[in-house]
Length: 413
Image: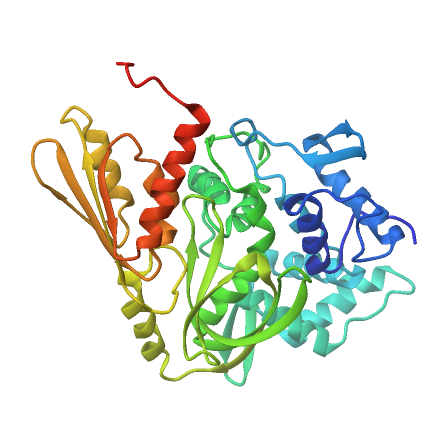
């Protein structure tokens, strides 16, 4: 099969890009999800989008290829290019431009008037043009009305269609869209808008830390936001575990959580099988199938609200509350540490004991989740206690291992 840069299904390319870049760029022999020919085709397709961001090094096992991006030096997320490589049928493209051209004069028209204009003013110029049927046009008009590209108003027993009259200048939104495209979970939408500018690549912002890879989950994110807005149950098709087998789970989406530490995205949802709230990583969701609307949606939202005061990350454990307490020594001149505590305490609380001592406390389902954060205060921790003694043991054991690894001079000032 001849190589083509365009794609018909984003789900397939999402899987390949994750296999190549998230899990490590596997060699042709290591990749067993598809045939070797499919591997070569998809690899060439991805290289056509991301070639300038790919690097390689020669190792004993062969050439190792990887994605190399300095987020401070690129204006836009390069992974958005995958979303813009979708293919369309010739009828899709033709009908898109014909519709916009017909409505460009600002006059409203009925569907039958639009259909007559297509036949008389456009297709008549071609000898063997394939006519558009009424069903195709009706679906396209409905799709564009839902997207906001055109307006549909009912007059009598039929709808009339026109272009929106309140189209604002894109230039007034340039800076906002630039920030949105690189900072928002659905930033790919902003990237499409930026393409309308002549100098779309001109950067307004640079970012020290960006989580580029999660652009691949934008389609799943949109499906989940739609389900939350519509208050619908969904069936998730999930993949995970060592064997990477797929499974299905019927859930009610409630909220999207995004880690500020690693950028990883999670869905908080009511799990009907477990009869409680659970979390699902978005990069493990292959497909979201909408089911029926849930009339008492607020009741399930309350379940999550009840859980939130004891959720530090995404672990719920066995629903046993664990109390953790940390005393920090902070010099008055280091007020930025206090500000950081306020900013990062999540469901915990902080209190000043005296001029140099501050207490942090939290009651959470899984205190081990705090461990990476607690370690960032090493050197200021005067005491650490937890009702789960395993947490204390783990912390001091790690500290001993650190001391053994780096050593130190007890007499050093």
